[in-house]
Length: 142
Image 1 (spheres, rainbow, N blue to C red):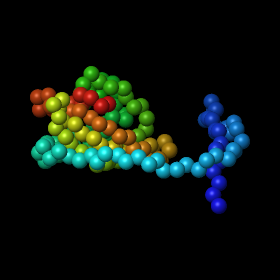
Image 2 (cartoon, helix red, strand yellow):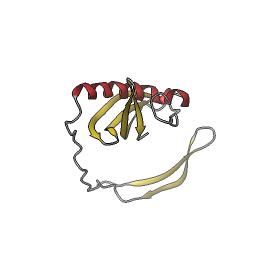
Image 3 (cartoon, one colour):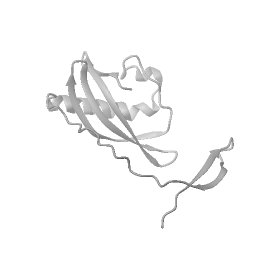
């Protein structure tokens, strides 16, 4: 027999966890019945380009958690907000490359390790990249 309960917990100003509501019986979570569309590469992107973009994305996502707004302007058009968290880049997961009218689109997940909690965090992105002179830049998706 399985039982599922919910407990309301908050973190006070001292960083302590405080239970604010006693456990109550709750419905057991179920798996959503959603069928996601298959994401496949359109094979219009040469392997040299995908290797180049993968290298760029690994560099960007390794720097992203510790970068300030000025440094991010070199990687993202018009800049972006810094993450400002203690995350360590682990890997890119399942990048899919597609050539579109707007540029090169990459759909991927990025795995980080939160060094404060030792928990893994996976973030999903759909990025549009363009090439400016000899460098790549993210034009949309961050």
